[in-house]
Image (tube, rainbow, N blue to C red):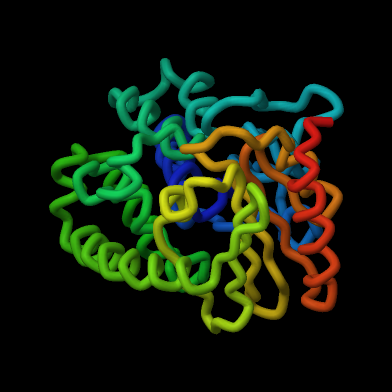
Length: 293
């Protein structure tokens, strides 16, 4: 049995819960959603997938993304919810060795972007928010750190986790990265009516940092579109503002037409670079119309 999930905070928490409930040993298989969508992942009998699109070879599947809604009932659990970890927790609550209720409450808030302005601007004052930001890369070479976090979440309190040397080092880096990220956002973001467009295609690698910061920097925007080059592909990420909630477009449904998917309020797509200009124009046009249909 293998756990297959994605390298973000929700995925890390899913892995911690599943390893506890099912007594699974590492390593974890870390996968990008687009790789699942394009059938680039070898899913095997016995695999347990969480926070990713469904694959018929798996034994169990847990997810919460609007765009991944199954056509028929499958083994595991699916529902539209703040986090996939919350669904795993509900499913296995009676088999878990410790109380994960506060971790799940915080994961729900972070993954659904249910944060305050102060949490956005000063994440260093909020341990769970800061911890989530230490997962800054999707590079497979980072898997050692992701699995280190999984082990910490299973065995340590949040205070102990934040005092772990590896976490402290990453937390210091997050603070520095967020300063540079704010400068990059200000220089490379433009506002078109209520849509802010961040273009990082000239960067290699693209700047990374606090994903909620753009909403406080551009308070008139109701939705942000970020485009960047990701390895040999292009990537567009779209998110409703959590401070100016006027966007009515279902992002996950919209991006399912552009080789991607996600939630009603946030999602992403990856595609060949030659499609970047066309996809960006079409996505921005849909967001400008702001049609809930």
